Image (cartoon, rainbow, N blue to C red; front, side, top):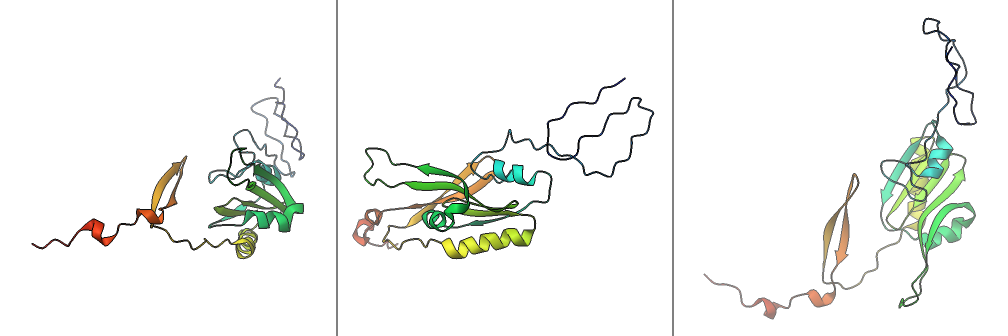
Length: 194
């Protein structure tokens, strides 16, 4: 006689019993299927393009889940000041003792707007998680409108982009040169005449 395997508690219906004989038909059930959500490989604080982070996985389990992602520059301080009561998870970076500017920096913010409605934000991206694609997009659009942080217009010597590869994600990172890197016309010399 086979014994039913033991499953961790998931808060839904118990798993069906294993038949005593492989020739007996499995009983039909009308109860919803159980899903075991393995949080072992998920990140606790930040969203990853391959897998949502732990709070989102735990909330949605096997239910419908849609995400919407937008890259840009975002004002995390303003997000926390306006939605601090909904801040579900965050990282706060403190300055080193010898830092010239003693600025505290928010990072990896997760806001919970409902049981299955989350917004993740860091300085470069906003990601909405919801039951429908439209709701996820609306969350991101609202945050983008309210918390967009325009880049300061500072005189520079130009910019270039570095290619970054992290797991399966390829992105670029903008690197700004100081004005002192500009070459003056006399440093280049007279034009060549052939």
